[in-house]
Length: 322
Image 1 (cartoon, helix red, strand yellow):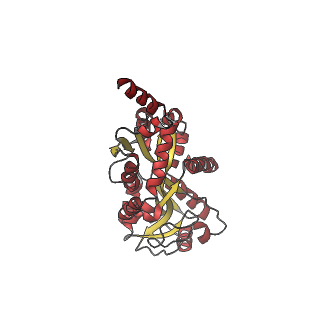
Image 2 (tube, rainbow, N blue to C red):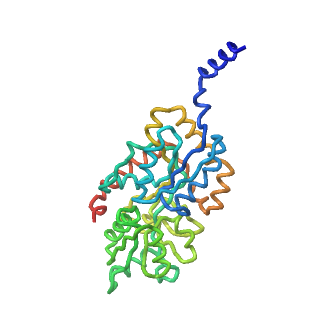
Image 3 (cartoon, rainbow, N blue to C red):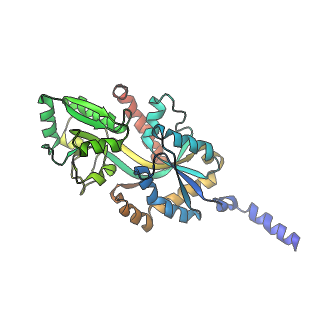
């Protein structure tokens, strides 16, 4: 009997996909590189319940704020080599940190994509009581105003701040740019009427919808239609040719895990894709107020975005370094 059992065990262990089927054998640590309750936390919760159900193990949230997400990414690299750590990040923040953050010790050579959850879009917002209802009205005033407009961005190296700098340069408005220590601070400043304009991601502005008007979105279409009815900036300002300033919120793992455990990585990716298209994820997105922004991308599509955004950074390097 012992010999028969041993023979069966050997066959099971040698069977194709045996190791693949065993993973994961314990809960997975999901790193959110910011404080609880923010956009990364909310976006993660769209998919983690269903993703965990697909994998047969739950996700445990680990909040690791600091250094524009780089502390969390370093923790992922150091603790995720066996596939028991994932993280959410805004992809272009990794591009920016690797290029402009002197103490950045991690980049895409250390990380591998699982997939994208939502795609946020940067847009121009004013207070609901502002006299400006279109970008043209804002620009006409800004060119001749006796005092510069106060324009807010998330922080000095944020995508929103790059978009704001380019907007000021191309439109020729008189403006003072204020870069905050986070997008939430810039939105609070606009809600309190301490600024005239901000450039902010749309999904994170939704909780402020009763205070804001959207004048234009830096994208080909407006994912926030019905919440903020605003045209694409390039349609409102033809000939100025602004790039799309998108901020995809997606999930990454350790690249070492992807390379050394390809079958387990493939299962993680496949389960993520199933989870994000599930009814449970759709309901969660609606609960989070993010349903309109859900936008699944495959790892290959994520990789292409990261490469394309590097081109944008190269093109506007002088503005990033201001």
